[in-house]
Image (tube, rainbow, N blue to C red):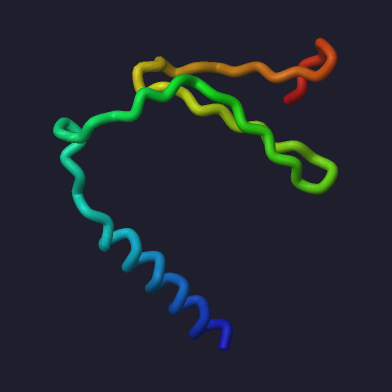
Amino acid sequence: MRRTLFFAIMLCGFMTAIAQPRYDLEKMSRERLNRGVVAVRSGERVVVSWRTLSSDASTSIETGRNSTPVP
């Protein structure tokens, strides 16, 4: 049963990966988005995520709580 479920999930993942169209990114128009932060509560924790721009270089983001760094 586990083996069948595993292969079914793997097949769905493979089919999803190959079914994606090949976009010509040079011809596509882009939305005018800015950098953004999103925070989602998950139980007692908060997951923080950032949206960066494609023109941003490799960026390091430091987080903190009450001026104390959070790893």
